[in-house]
Every structure is written in structure tokens, then in C-alpha cells.
Amino acid sequence: MSPDAIDMVLLTHGDPDHIGGLLDRAGDLSYPRARYVLHEDLWNALNSAPTAGLYFPGQAAFVRRLATLIESRMILFDAPYAVTSGVQVVPAPGHRAGHTLYRFFSRGEALWHIGDAAFDPLFLERPELVIPTEYQPDVARATREALAQQASEEGAWIVGSHFRACDVGRLSPAGNTARFRWGTDEAANDP
Image (cartoon, rainbow, N blue to C red; front, side, top):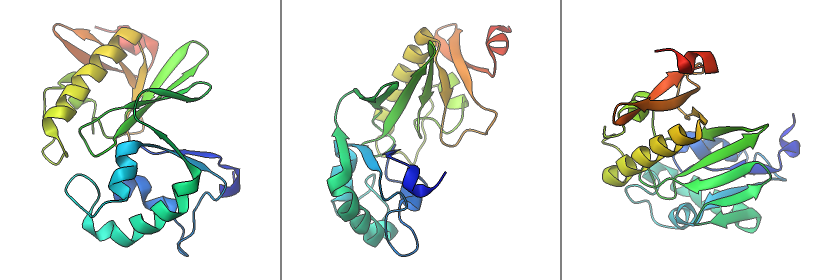
């Protein structure tokens, strides 16, 4: 697939490992025909001075260039929103400004891409754990707790940006918390 074929880019947040590939070496958009879906708080962060939780100081020139190039191509939101058929954006605050998760629906199944709301399934098994480098740790923890509860109730598949490739699974109740179950439907039903 060529970069020109990409018509939509879904942004979870502004950390360098999530937006660093959006500009090519010449400083032009890597996906020149795409629209860019992002939370209003992320847009505000991209247009602010580098501040804790917004973006990293070393990104300043990159972020200014990116913001200029995507401004006329943005789809901004501040609440859950169906961006296209089968794709819903959901604010997931706490990790970084404007952090977002994406829910994909197809053939009666749901897959949630949770960005950096959890770096590993352990943080979904035990959503009370804190990731100390988060922008708003208490808010992020509350987001993980709500995410775990809702995904468990929905029976959704879950994947995170930093999960290992094999770590796609579902949450199911385990006592008073949610527990991440691995892989297939059969694995999710194993004790």
C-alpha cells in the first residue's frame, strides 16, 4: 500500500513514538492525502509550548511543522464520536493530553486499540497500578478501571500500542477486578 492510499490517520496522543512517522525526511506529510483524527486537547497541546504531559521539548520544531501541515486536514472531537462506519473514537484521558482509544466494529465483534492507556495487559488485570510517567496518573488509573469494566462487559478484543504482538485478548471478570485473558475465544474461557 502506498502512502498516497492512506486516507485517515487515527492519533492516540503526541508522544514521539506515536507521531514521529507522520513527517518524512523532507518535513512533508508521510500520508499526504490523509485526514487526521485527534482529540481537541491533543490539538491544543500541539499548539502549546512544550510542557509536561503535552509533548517532549525535543519535539518542538517537529510538532510546529506537523500542526501547520495537518490543520486543514483535521477531524477534531472532544467526546465519543463515530468517525466512520465501524470506527469510534473515545477520549481516554490521563496518559497524555488528548489521549484517545479507538473502537473498531466488524461482523459483530469489537476490537479496542487502547493506545498507551496500558503498556501491558498487567495494567488491565490490575488497573489500580500507576505508571509514574503519566501526565495525570490518577486520571489515567480511573480511565484504565473504566476501560477494563466496559471492555469486559462488552467482550471486546483489546490491543495496546506497546503490547507484544501475541497480546491481543479479552478481559473477563476475576473477582472484583478485570483479568486479561489471552488470544482466542477458547483461551478466554480457560480457567
